[in-house]
Structure formats: structure tokens, C-alpha cells
Length: 300
Image (cartoon, rainbow, N blue to C red; front, side):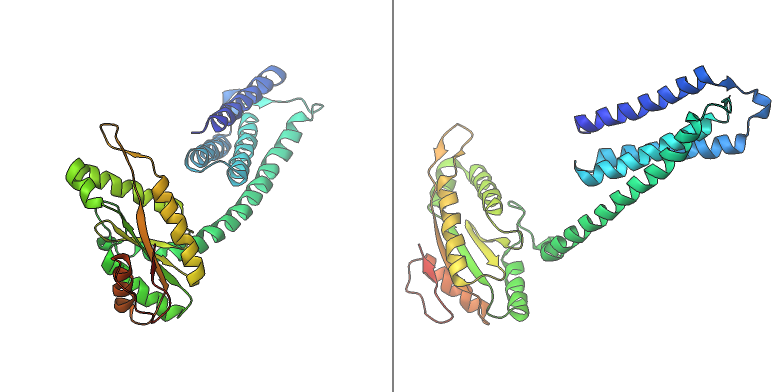
């Protein structure tokens, strides 16, 4: 739990303890014979459950306005129920009105605060749902994920290319990125070090992509990036950014050696024949002449 939230939780229980001291010092204890056990169980249980819910929210959510409103509202409801419960144990003189104010303000104020928190939480969920809809295809088929990089594989990429072309024909683009001389790194440093490098590059590329983009391990040290709603010019700009990111990656082997990295990239707009598109981009990365159909397939 975050430190500020731990302080808030401590403050909540300190206030509850202060209420107990206040009732004990200014009120008169009621005989046990007249205690209303139904009210004690109901109000005490409400206080206990509200405190538990506030604790769960503070321990499971990131910081922010929604978390504070939800936990704050539940804390006020807890204190209101706690004050009602203390009324079953202590009698407050009629001329003292502070206990009525506490009972009248804490629970309704907590419910209002909790309602505001739920309202903003609903807005937050709308945004999250919209984001998850964009990323949903990443989680549909776990068998299509690469074991080393945890990225989608080439088969998954091909299905998504066809799906994207059906949904938004001619509006998206594809980038292939190939790490230069990766076979030498594997040979000189070992396959385990090569796998570490692939994982590092995967994280690096993800950090440099838009939320809606799809990164796949296409083959070996070759990555594919599907760019929905992106022109060839946008793909070219992103491809060069990714190329620069790989070049600037300070990856060190386990013995402390820094590997000098570079990569080649090729990009093009999507076309109906995805296999032909992938083949054309592959040839561009290999330095063979690119077929001009379907837009540029430039390798740099």
C-alpha cells in the first residue's frame, strides 16, 4: 500500500478512537441490560465492513482522485456507523448536540463522497474499456504468443493483417524491423544472451509504439509492427524512430560488454494480399529490389 494511503488508514482509525474517547468522557455508560444488540450488530457490522472495503480499495487501486473519493466516502460511512454504534453504549445529555451533528453529517457526507467516486470511476471505466477494445485482439489466443518475447507470433500477425484489411482497407500500414548481425551475437555470446537481447528489444519497441499498435515477433530477430489508421508517411516516421531507438539501446551482456546494435526497417501500406506484402517487405530488408505494387517497401 502506498505510504500516503497508509497514513490515511491510520488517520481513519485514530478518528474512530477519538470518537470512542469523546463518548466515553462526555457521555454516561449505559447499563448492559438496556443494550440493543440488534442495533449494535447492525451498526457495528456496517462500520466494520465499510472499513474493510476502504482498506481493499486503498490496497488494490493506484493513486488518484477516484481512489481517494471511494475510500474517503467509505471511511466517512464507517465513522458514521461507528458513532451510531457508540450511542448504544453511552448516553449523551440532551443539551449537547455534537453527537447529533456527527450522526447527521458523517453518513450522508460519506454517501455523497462515495457517489462522486463511483461517478468518476464510471468515467474511468469507459476510458479503460475503450482502450481494452483496441487491445482486445492481443489477448484472444494465448497459443499464438512467442515463448521468449511474450509477443504474438507470425501466424497471429497474418490473421490480424487480414482482419485489419477487412475492417479498414487501405488505412493501415506495416513495418518490419530486422536486427543487424544478430546471428553473430548468438554465436559469440550464446543463445541465452541472444534471448535476453530479444526481450530487451521487445520492451524497447513497445515503449516507442502507440497504444493501438500491434508488435509481433515475425521470425528470429525480425519484428513486425501493425499500425492501424496509419499512412505510409506515418509508418516511415515510426519506422525511423524505432530504428533510432534500437541504435541507442545500451544493452550490456552478463559480463558487462555493451553490444553495438543497429537495425534495418521496411514499411508499406496494407494491401489485400498480405502474404505478398510480407514477402515484399522481406525482400526489401534483404536488399533485393522491391516490387512497386501496393505502395513503398523501403528498407533503411
